Length: 401
Image 1 (cartoon, rainbow, N blue to C red):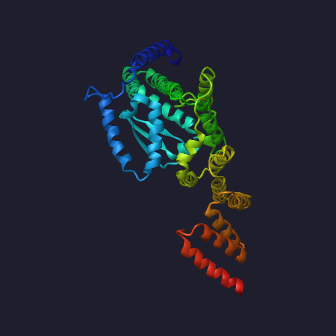
Image 2 (cartoon, one colour; image 1 turned 180 degrees about the horizontal axis):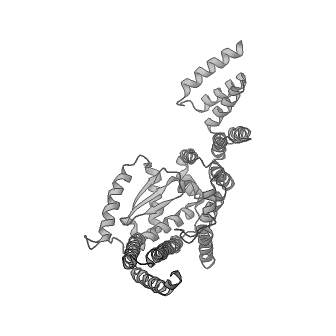
């Protein structure tokens, strides 16, 4: 009986494949500057309504970075990239330690601090903003919504058509496979289209075209160092249902575009780090909350190599990463990193306290007291000053006994 269902199964699958392809015609014209939904009862207006409500939450979020200078700078870069669409854009910086940015159909753009920390220069940052603008420009979220709805409808029709027959289980399962493949393929296609648009926008804005691929190269190296097997694996295996292109695919695409473009353009590394410097310590501290310490350490090595962030600050947070990871040998690595921080041209006061804490832990009272004093000199307004002064009294009393 089983062998006899090949022909009807073939017919059913051909029918659902045809239906899915027909439904997939969801392309939307490139949006114009200032464009808003025309049909207020349509699905586009519905999506805008949902996103507008979400924007209310983002606007009042405790994660929102409200530093006026930083927000003005990021807005400036974004407007340089999006050009005439600048008035459509409302930008929010969230202190979230993830490499990400996103732009929504109503013009809301969100930039995470993890991206700002990891971009080596303004050109790389502009490439990512351009990519997100590409999604907005081509209305990818609305296209994807319609495509998912179409695929869901097609699958439901197949289930109804084969209900109560031998085909129902097998054909529905294979129909679902086709639907899922179509959806994930479209998503990868949209991502690569956004990459190309982001590249073009960065190039138009005068940035060095080579930096777009470098953004992903740098992230791939960091990902490869992750403590998480799943994170490491994500960089090299996408599978048929992967929703994003592999980093290697993006790098190849962006590198090929750069090779075909005129050389030169702005990088603006020094300007980028100068305009973000006031936030770097907070972002480095926040990054440790991910508890992916090997990945954080890979980021620190890159920051030291490029030299755009104060070396003492990076060494201190490397010491913190080793201390928190607490694997074999990390205690020694931690104190060595603190020592490098303290010996740098721009030592963060926290490194002095960390060294003092280590001396105190090992019973070296006089050394601990000396480092605590140095800490208080370098950080006279320290929030823990009263605590440190009480520790010093105790240490000096013990040293006299």
